[in-house]
Image (cartoon, rainbow, N blue to C red; front, side, top):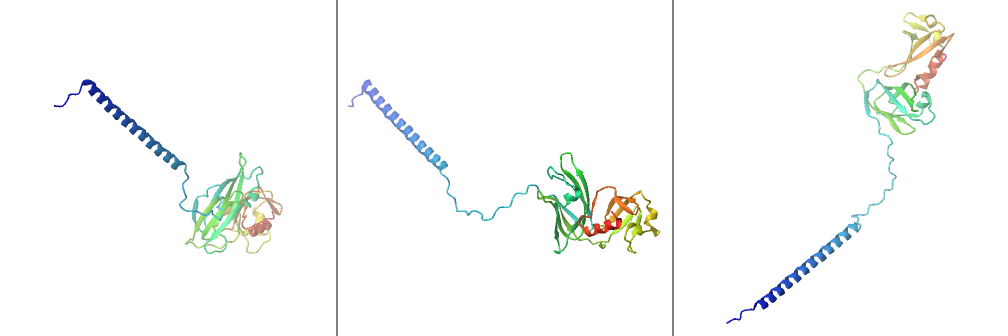
Length: 267
């Protein structure tokens, strides 16, 4: 017959069991902490360790293109023998040039479809300084042949205007210089040397008879593919004429036409 355990023996066995369970729990916790610590250390080392490149990339041998300081203007589409007005404000710094001087700082860039000649021309230009020290300038352009064209401010490289010029089904008239005094067209068939040696149509009257000395007249010059008029206010002074204003600058892209007009008008 088995002996019954006394209460003291039972309590001693229970205490031993609790101590064993507590030690096992503490051991498990310590082991878990160690595992977590090891994992954390490995993760920290993996974060700080630089990643190895997948492949060696050679350095570029060419110099990258500089960033454009200003975005190009919107592309304009137009036909041959049409006109457009381009108005810009240019910053030249402390010294603001005249319109004639400013035009020399605007590059004309041509991209003819046939690879030859120019695609547009500046007919006239005018403008004035702005209160903030810039130059406000308007340029009257005429498209001459299919292709592309741009106006670029040389100082900054800014694209002021760019266009795609398409062919036209309309017949293009040859560029010939036409001069109009008021409402009369000067007759150049007799090859007069000056404005006051010429006659006008209609009526075949001498210019000196329709233009009294000391009076001003609106002179119109046409020399473009678009047939666009360029107006110049002019005053008669004896057998000569003088411009009332310096603007507009006329036909800056056609110096031969300017030379002919200057001699004929005796400016």
